[in-house]
Image (cartoon, rainbow, N blue to C red; front, side, top):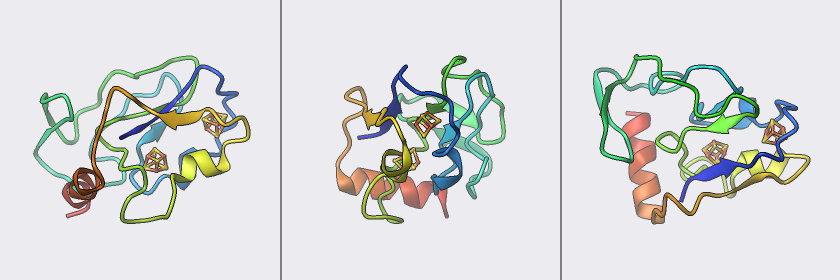
Length: 115
Ligand code: SF4
Ligand code: SF4
């Protein structure tokens, strides 16, 4: 499943550069699929919504850093464990129960993001 950031985030910014999928954004910053990936053209999000990879989307959180579920692969294919959780000083990067995914699905997501 994807990882999410709880409201205990202290906005230290340590996690953002560690993400291999550029799935982490500062609060209030717009996100896109194309940031840090090789995706061009249409892309289907985990909720089935189809977006253009380069379109800027509304921030998911404004007061804390946040993770885009469609870009988080739990670091599968890159690292042994979620890097955001490994570096977070307050342990607020936790599994997001809303997005249950198998390892195979996460690896498939990684392949779609990094063609
Ligand atoms: S678990 Fe990995 S892929 Fe997901 S947001 Fe954290 S660093 Fe990025
Ligand atoms: S490392 Fe943790 S506390 Fe720091 S910005 Fe990321 S989620 Fe927030």
